[in-house]
Image (cartoon, rainbow, N blue to C red; front, side, top):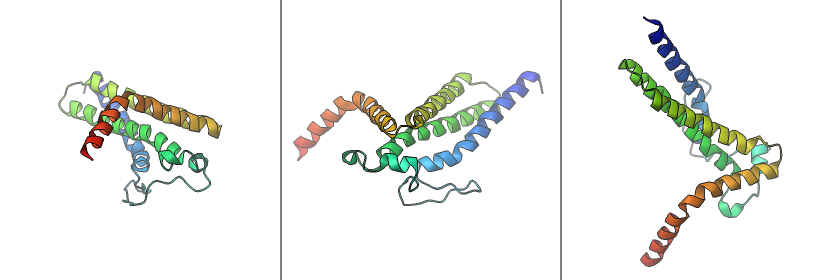
Length: 163
């Protein structure tokens, strides 16, 4: 095995190892508890932050008109994207490795998306101030919703004509 091939194998293994480590985080994001052996157990209950936790208090009574658990659900979405992108990077690189070709652009793009999404969740929850965490989550939700406003108006008009 030559040195270049060995380096590629090492990269595949590092990405795969990180993808495996993200699995419990993905389980948390998808509302299924991860068991200590790495398996998952389906749970019909919604994700609810631990009682008395900072995240639980962030959600408590905050913006009920937007639904329950505004802060935790807003912070959970980027984590879901990050874990899915990292698993996708491991799969893409693994497949390319098996076919003895390199697909660096796809892997790099997926890893970059994973890093950016992870950073978003960290930024949303990192400030020690509850008011700041809440404000960041509302701002993030608004920034995600704003480009969709035109489509939402079309859909609302469509529903009005049907009923």
